[in-house]
Image (cartoon, rainbow over all chains, first blue to last red; front, side, top):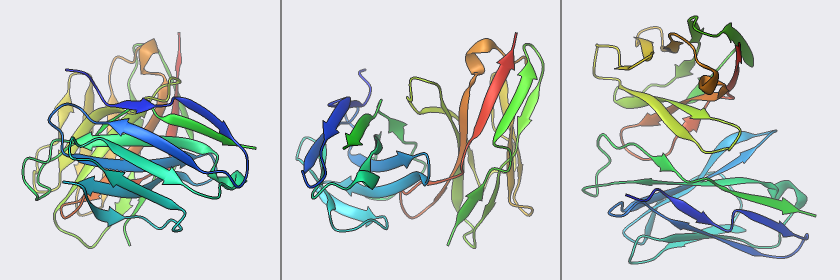
Length: 117
Length: 114
């Protein structure tokens, strides 16, 4: 079974632009979570989607948004990019057999490395 | 708010020896999960081992085992017979039972000496 895939793998943008990152979960997985990883702040939770609904959101400004499609694929968007948005963005998927959490493990994609100039 | 602390920024071990990575956490929840993830230079985050808080028995996965001390809020990872391929950043993570948000420690860089 294919793992979590993320596209693109690398991205260079300039300040003020916007960017969209994509995540395809493991087949059959219904929950998708996004994380930002930077040298200064470490790993931080952005948001989690299940059944096309955002269930949980981290402490990030409104410039960071996401969505999930009916096939469970997810996108995250960052508008008005700032230098501090340069990071590795990781996506993780979970089976989520029911709408509850239960004993679920998150499996991660390879990440998208975003550089903002 | 829940927090996870990894007090060892870097550890080194001789190949074939045993090393223990430390992790402490703070929570007022009773139901939660703890994880160790490995991130090699490829940056792919790989699950090493998980522990359910309601289980008293420590989790083991081949050469990897944990020492889970719930009262002390401690969750250390022991790697036996260290191999060169174990070299990576190791992250301790916490998740409460009610959502999928992982709260991460700062990570420990593990160096394996041949």
